[in-house]
Length: 266
Ligand SMILES: *[C@@H]1O[C@H](CO)[C@@H](O)[C@H](O)[C@H]1NC(C)=O
Ligand SMILES: *[C@@H]1O[C@H](CO)[C@@H](O)[C@H](O)[C@H]1NC(C)=O
Ligand SMILES: *[C@@H]1O[C@H](CO)[C@@H](O)[C@H](O)[C@H]1NC(C)=O
Ligand SMILES: *[C@@H]1O[C@H](CO)[C@@H](O)[C@H](O)[C@H]1NC(C)=O
Image 1 (cartoon, protein in one colour):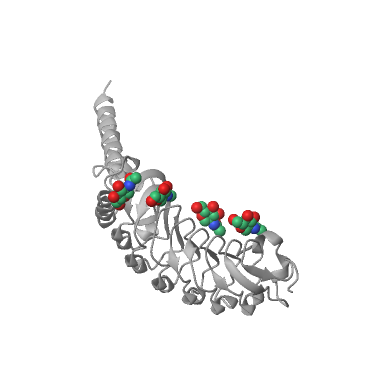
Image 2 (image 1 turned 90 degrees about the vertical axis):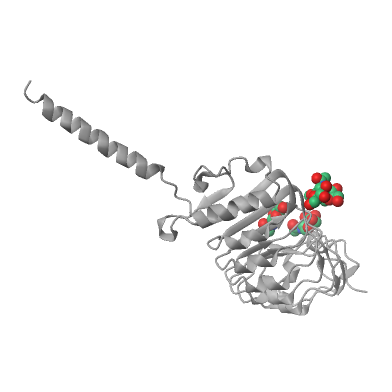
């Protein structure tokens, strides 16, 4: 029995180590600046039930709708995805204060109104921007051209008005644009014939776009994503490019578009 004291010592030591590990692993990963910003966002959205898990006492990396990056970015918040909830208010300008964010989504919320805030231009790492099925008004902002890392832009199902900024085509990584189901007017920008990046889809259906389809658009290889149906476009569908690859439903319900795949022009 003379080994008992040593055993006790060993167990105490093991217990102490376990205790240290527990302390270390329960430490918040969440960055304090991100947490403060998120709490402001929650307040600005009128503390919705949807964000009930956003409790200041807990680690924000465990909150609903959020994703933190790994150790290489010090666990900063990289994704904020708020969808399918009963939420009223505007897109909080504070979203611009989550500097590591790559994906920002507000989708299918009951009552989000107002304009797209210019503070999102501060998000230098932003790659995927979805603000859809909300009730946003105002323009598709010109300032989006400042989001140099943007790959995907989906502003569908809103009440956005005004014309489409031609500067979107200058974004070096943008490979998908969906502006469908808005109230956009004006013409399809001529510049959309040559994007800085390859553009696999361009969805502009259900707007009030007028004029003709720029001939330059045939230069793109839109693969399977191109749709200008339900607008007020007129004139021949440009030939000699890739635009004849699409079907009738890509072009139908316009004012007077003509030529293949629609009826031939008079
Ligand atoms: C929608 O939000 C606005 C303010 O953002 C508010 O005035 C209005 O009452 C809300 N409507 C509904 C149906 O919740
Ligand atoms: C947008 O607002 C209108 C009324 O202003 C409402 O009928 C509609 O449900 C709202 N849509 C969304 C997606 O919030
Ligand atoms: C854009 O978002 C809507 C949902 O609101 C979705 O139905 C649509 O497929 C998205 N567009 C693209 C091209 O991913
Ligand atoms: C284009 O959009 C219209 C309207 O939303 C839809 O009915 C049609 O199926 C779409 N065309 C293609 C090829 O997806």
